[in-house]
Length: 486
Image 1 (spheres, rainbow, N blue to C red):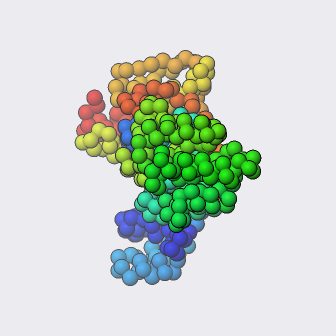
Image 2: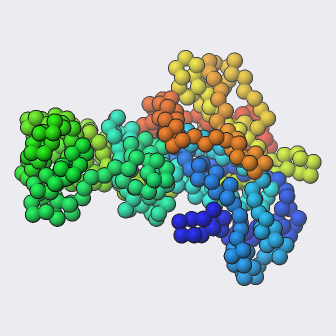
Image 3: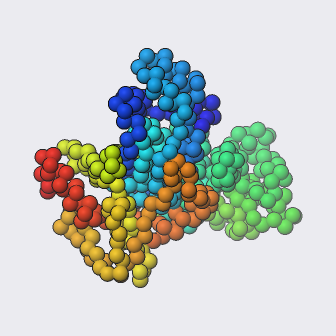
């Protein structure tokens, strides 16, 4: 797999993955089967949930894993690696299994979003790239979902390419923003590659290139009569921008029978200016003229603008979305949870820490989501051992993730397993959905979360519980290693 600048992305790994791989090889452990979970610990912006994204790029990466002669030569030149290990890398390919929660699904802290079962060296080498894609795209999809919910049904366009953190930040960031709910992007290549609808009109430079603002508007209307959206704040929004836009609409569009057009504001007091703009446009006979605003927006500013009665039809959101400026790190981790012995028995593993939040859940696991059969709403997630089943014909008691004495009983629910198998014995067995299907899944699944979970401030703590079997295993392993159970 090559990047845009010709780099083999197999080499996009932390160096310790290679040194550990060499060590595994030296110890004869290269074929030892191990299990890793990818999960995250805290929701960005202290929100109630996150959105899973990035799986499609992970699939592409896994399918193309290989080491070029150039890569082998570089590693040999470091003087650290055994020749047998380098020979092993020459024929490297992924032969393991991967399970994942589909893109567009709401996800919660500590539950396995992706599980990898593979020989040790293979599993170790996946860590960096898998985390890179999941962390970045889940972060942006989550932020976009917050922004789009704040817009209350108004269209949101992602405008952040020029301030994204690198090429991938712009390109896959636009993809993730679309999953989260954005209607489109300003990033042309994201449309070309992924089909994220690209849209755009003009910059202030267009207006400045002409002798007058009116001439600039007339020219644009003549060139794009069916998509005439004019930027009206280059000089003075109310005294010249909107009046000149109305004059241009009257001169060019009205004789053509076109009534749909738009204006965009990129500065000023948006609440006041959009109210005045709406009044001026309506009085001039242009009630179908839409108003779009941009300029350092996020979910909180959008919420405030709507609260103040701003007359806005759509939003262009840039840097604060594409960088998730208010909470720029997703924090997903890749942790060993089990290994297989020579007889194929699964031996659970646990990581301990003085920080309780960093203690991992051991074993080969799966995740259920419990939906209320009467309301259709998500009530809780349930992490259990892979060989456990849930009987959803009866009742089940669920604990609060932060207070095991706080419980609720579900007695009319449907248990839906969240992870699907993506790779089996190194072969792709999952039919990747289209980007539109992922976006639709996100909207449908978020709609099944209670409003209290979706609050921007102090959201309700969604229950993510461990099965009794998993909890007993975790408690046993903690006690064996000297940790007190509280």
